[in-house]
Image (cartoon, rainbow, N blue to C red; front, side, top):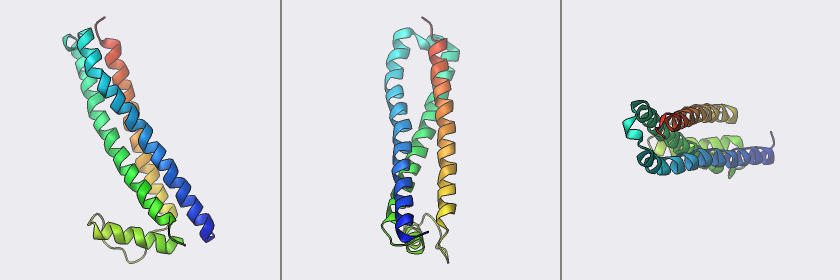
Length: 147
């Protein structure tokens, strides 16, 4: 991969990660902001199954926000990698930063870009699973709320 192709690939991946970390977090925050108002207006506290669904939705919302924060941090790391001329120096810069922050031990050689992308895609899949659980629980709570 040429140096320019490497920089473009990491830059595009960082841009995609920013979008993928922002929209689930925004939806979760908006839904959780209105949930107490709707639940109290409709008397959801009198339906135990609705309360349970709201608790599951709240717990999964915290997980979604956590994964969104991690993906946002990864996006910044990929953005840092894209500022370096090649994959070796970009990976070394990220590994050095993570070691100085005491988040990961110092590595003797930087991991390849494909390994880093694969790890971030696993985080993205976990975020989507947590978001699906949130959406199902949130919709279930609305379904079981008294009218």
